[in-house]
Length: 206
Length: 206
DNA sequence: TTGATTAGGAAACGATTGTTTCCTATCTCG
DNA sequence: CGAGATAGGAAACAATCGTTTCCTAATCAA
Image (tube, rainbow over all chains, first blue to last red; front, side, top):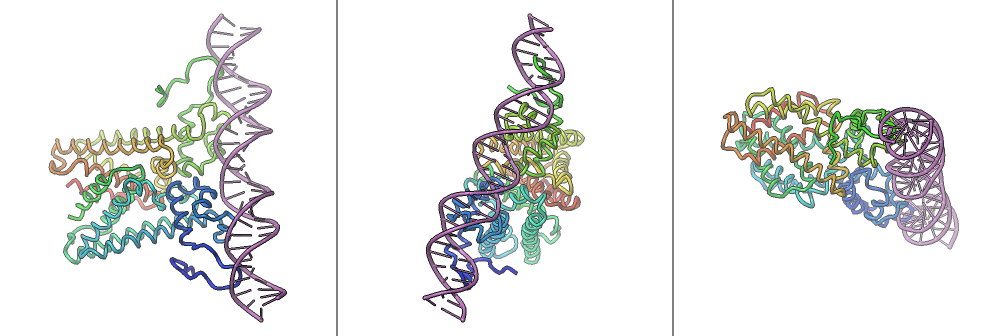
């Protein structure tokens, strides 16, 4: 299937080669979707942000929905790519969990917080009547939940997290917490507020 | 200013009297907005759901945005009206907090969960470029946070919640948790999953 | 009654939407 | 080189959007 993820080769074949980097264009579209959501982002907005005419965009994407789906996938991948080194920098499970919660808090305040979360936009605007979109939202949430559960398990193995606590319920509760951080951060709270909330939630692991 | 909230009198004055109950119409519009969000809900959708022609709707509301704002206010009021008796049924602060978290969990699964939350829709779709909408979202979140903080304080007073814990940080963390329940519930998790997450979060008060 | 006023509703409105068309430019392949 | 194929981009496209108009119906004040 699609192996196109990031920095894939410009593709070899006949015809005039593409003059823009699809990932760069997608990063620009991503910002528009995050700020405006799906429906309020017009093709005009996307065209201006991507620095491409509508005609060129339609050569690369089937329709507006396809742009959003591609931006969505890229957004999810980028978030995890940004998070990973923060997790790697921590020694034990608890430290990694703290890093994860703080990552969400750090990206949920002020300017970066007001730029929204595509997962939440997709859930609110499209998931109800678009099964494929709903499946992607579910998968994106599941991915975070699984990561949380794995980190809890790791913490229990290395002794940094109490062995007694329910991994599944705790992972789900923390999943809700981080998604809530994104919601609350959309209307602009201070960094200190968000960090304090995340640190307070961390006490579920004490 | 507007004192129109619920079950206000049909208004006295000259001219043909209104034939529909604005609150009933608003309840119907509310469902459309919850399922589709703001932009994807067309006036045609609203007209059909409200059982009114567009012309009649525009007699009662300035524009589509005004319908959403009215539906938003009504949604927030209705949610608190549904929650209040559950709080009243509990004796101490901890019981009330448990009731609040479970109320969010109970309304965040399956059909009722897939119907979304207007606060989140408003935040994701409108708040970025509509200051008045952003203010309403902020106020709605603040109202829940304040309620949580008050209930924590009450619990600390009656001894059902540890006196040592940080009221502000805990209220904010629980606010994020319940908003996260609404996000996750949008793509349909089981009742058991949501209740378990809420109950697990409740251990922040132990 | 009569006049003023407002609601209900069908139809029409201009604007904007997402999308396509068409022409030119640039590449690969033989 | 020439044939085929694809990208870039301006302009045109049909459809849908939110909104208004206009006419009739129902009410209140006098």
